[in-house]
Length: 113
Length: 116
Picture 1 (cartoon, chains in turn orange, cyan):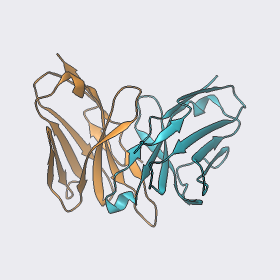
Picture 2: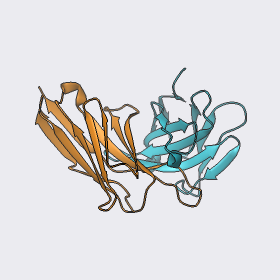
Picture 3: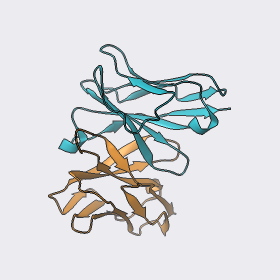
């Protein structure tokens, strides 16, 4: 079953606006990470938030985590055309020795100039 | 410090042939992970390896797929007798420690496999 589910699937906004993407997951986690993927490229790590943290900032990025609701949000402020990409949340798979990440299907973000 | 290297970047194989995908982790990283991405999908975990050991291969198909991470040299993902459904982007990632402990995974650029 899909551990991370991003919402919305696609988002198109004007340059300068803020973009908010949400992620829900099903099982308990140690941490949650957000990644960006430009079309046809590899993934770039954006931010990691641990299960005992509620909010984290990095430049124009703000991530929140609500473990009671099993959800996270990624906010990109003052969006730029270069932010156009797919954004994925990923949760750790650590159970019984397993490791690695479980990804959602992603939110495709388009920033219109 | 070079990032995670994958080669080839693009690979075309006919049905029934073998595909070998290589991944060189970042220097000092002993944890390697392989993921598969279908078009318009997120990445799906396949296998987790440490030097010379497969730790978790629960995401890998039972047949035709195998992975190794030898003491010397890159990690190899091998797909025997490829079928059209194997067409996908295969990403390798490495980390200095377990993801669950809060270590960041560094991803390679991926190998795009096309089966004709």
